[in-house]
Length: 399
Image (cartoon, one colour):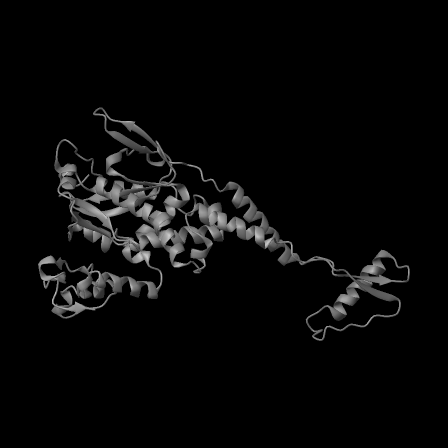
């Protein structure tokens, strides 16, 4: 819980060596091994990857944020790990994509913060474990033991734990997608078999002569060889008067696309996303609801868990926290973003240089740091017959 706790005797951590850390990362269950049947279904992978990459697009910062709205970024090792390099193998985007993929697949994901001897955060490592147990040491502190790594128990306060469908002992160890997956797999497997065999009878070749079974097969093979080949580009064939072709009107579609679509939508909803968002047809309201209901809860959980596990109580009391910025995610289209920034400038919430920073432009002249004065927000001066006061937030006016 932060470097102050780390160097204090009361909450002394058991630091692990580089060899122990590498051994811990090599054990456990790889992502592709667990839930591979679930993750290999395209609809499931699409939903999980969409949400994981969206959460990974949220920038997380170390800030000091008081209770009256002042937020000051802190540029230290915490911020470096969160914004530049999560660990030696992963950038922050890749790290959070992996972490979110794992928690959506397994309902639990554990992260181990690596500290140096001075208590500086060096890296965040995703831990490849699913099965775990809790116990207590002689002082009453909670210890977590991973069954694949039972020789190295860790204090629960030293491990970041993200969970879905939480219970008293973490996220549930079962997914509720079994029947949906069976239906999708059965329908898709049948469609693949139909495409491979294409064995439906479309017509019957009839003969007026009584032929032996071997002769009938011979005549059929002869007909297919002559007329049912790629060389028969015209599609025409000739048969003798002793034969007749009787077409069969058998519907060739066995895949119930309506049912498959309904089940797919249910799977998307299970993971917190809609078909409209997946297929980029969502309205602005639908997209906002996706961010509010599907992304922000994960951001809040990450903020709370990292703040508690990375900082000590005295550090938290001095307003240290991990902050995730979701404002830019809430607007899906260029038109909506343009309107958003216009309103933020009009309402004196942002100045023009702050807007330039958000859209990736270089800083403009110093006068762009001034808030545009909007007379709709001026305080009326009763002594001046209701006229607006000349005092404003800036030197420019906006009609």
